[in-house]
Image: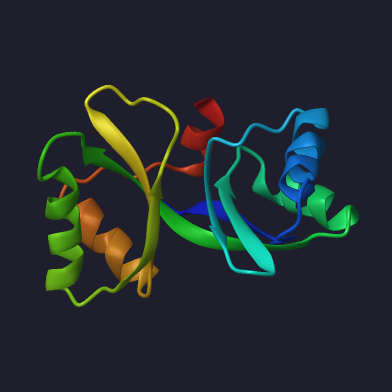
Length: 143
C-alpha cells in the first residue's frame, strides 16, 4: 500500500516553479499534495499525483530530473496527539522518519500525511496491523 511520489529537481530561479506547474496544468495533471524544499541553487518539489509515471515522463521530456519514490500516505486522526500516536508507533519499532508533509485535501476527521521512512515495508506492516488506514494509488486518483 505505497503510493508513488514524484521528486522534481528545479533550479532556484524566478519562474522555474511556475513553469513546472504550467506544464502540469497544460496536461491536466493535478498536484494532490506537494512539498518544496530549497537550497541556494535548487529546490526539490515532492508531490503526489494520480498518474505518477505519466507525470515523471512528461517532466523528463521537458528537461527536468525526476525521481519516483514509494511513500506511505496515511490517514492520521486530525486531533491533538493524532500525529504523535503514529510517530510513536514508528519510533517504538526503530523506524526512522526521513520527512513528512500533508495533503491539501480534506478527509473529514483525518489529516492525510505523506511519510518517507527508512524501512517502508516494516512501517507499512506495523501501521496496517495497528489498524491505521493507508491510501493506495487508486485512492489518490479518486481524490
